[in-house]
Length: 80
Image (cartoon, rainbow, N blue to C red; front, side, top):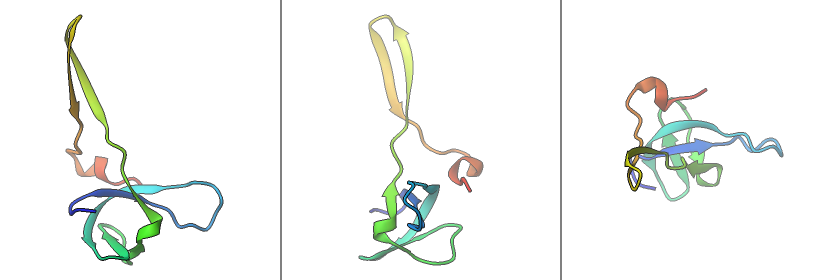
């Protein structure tokens, strides 16, 4: 992982896949990740990279622009 990345994490206590986030990565080690808004470190096996989001703009029937969407507001960065 490279700083700053956006990651999702799970508490691992249930068999249902429930992810919290995305949260911005502040620091990383070989075994743990420190994210914004969470006091404790999270083990690397409990995080995953946020899937890329894309937006499209149709210019004509045969031309289209595809570009990645980045978070622009702090309210879009955190979901609790």
